[in-house]
Image (cartoon, rainbow, N blue to C red; front, side, top):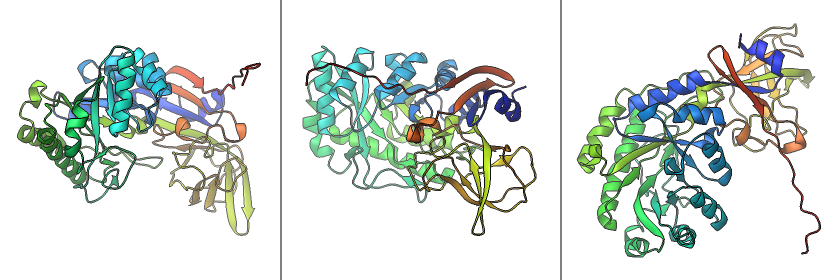
Length: 412
C-alpha cells in the first residue's frame, strides 16, 4: 500500500519517504549498544522533521533528548514535545537574542565554545534572573582514531583548545549567570570501524577526567560526543557495535567511578545513525540526453533537494535503484538535477539499466541531511514532499514552504 511507486504516483516526485519503524529500530539499537544509564542527544540538524523528532523522544527511559543549534531547531523540538529541560543548545554563533529566546522557552543547558561565548550566555541568563548550566566544548589537541572524519585537533571555531583550558579555569568558574556543568566533546564523525570509535571514546573519557581535576570543578554531565556510522545515499546497513557497551563501561569505571549513579551523568549524541536508514529519496527521470559520448539522466531531484550540505560542485556517491525499465539502452550515466548550474550533479558514470523519461529511481539511506541540508531555495523550485509512514500505514505528508515577510513604511 505504501510502496515507492504508488506513493510517487499519489504525491509526486521528488519526495522523501520516511519510515518511523526504522527510526524506532535505530534508536533502540543505539541504546542497546550503550551501557545502561547513558543519555543520548539527537542532533536535530540531521533531520528536524517533527514526526521523526517525536519518534526519537518516545521510548520511555530509552528516549532521546535534543541537541540544537538555532532558534528554528528550538521551535521544531518544542513542537515535537521536548521540554526545555531535555534540550542542549550548541553552536559557535549564539546571539543574545537567540539565547534569550531559548532561556525564555525553558532551555537551561548550553554548550559553550570560548570565553566570549560563555560570557554571552551568562549575560542573557542574568538579564532574566537565571543561571545557565554550561558545558565547555573541548577541541582536543590529540585523538585516538586512526580513521574517520576528525572534528578536533586543528584550529577551529568549535571548542576550547584543550591545552589552554586549564589556564582559564579561574576565569571560567566566575562568569556571572553561568555554572560550569561539565564538558562537551565531538571529536569525530561517521567512524570507519568499531575499533576507531572505541579508541576515540576512551581517549575522550581520559581527557575529561584529567580536565575535571585541572579545572577544579565536579562535573555533573560529560557529553562524550558521537561518531556512530551509517551509510549515506548508498546501499548498506547500519553497523552493529558488539564490543562498545563493555568497553565504554570499563573506561568510565576507571575514570569516573560514580557514573553509574549519575555522578557525573554521561551522554552521547548522534544524528545520521538514528535517521539515515529511515529515509528514501524518490525521484523521476525528466530527460535523457547524450552529449559528446556522455549520457545524462536529468532528474527532478538535484542539489536543491538532496545537497547533503555539499553546496555547489560536490559529487555524491549515490546509489540508485530503478523501479522499471522504459526502453533506453543501459549506458552508464551522469545523474543531473533540474537546476541551471553545472554543479547540479548527484553522480557520475552510474551504471543503470535502460531508462527513459518517467522512470522512477530511489536513493536509499537518505533520511539524514536531506531537504534542510540542501540548497532548498536556489532557483525557487518547490521543496520535495516528505511522506511519513509506519510500516504500511500513512502517517503524514508535508512540504516546507518559504514565505517572504515584509515591513513597509518603517522609518530608517
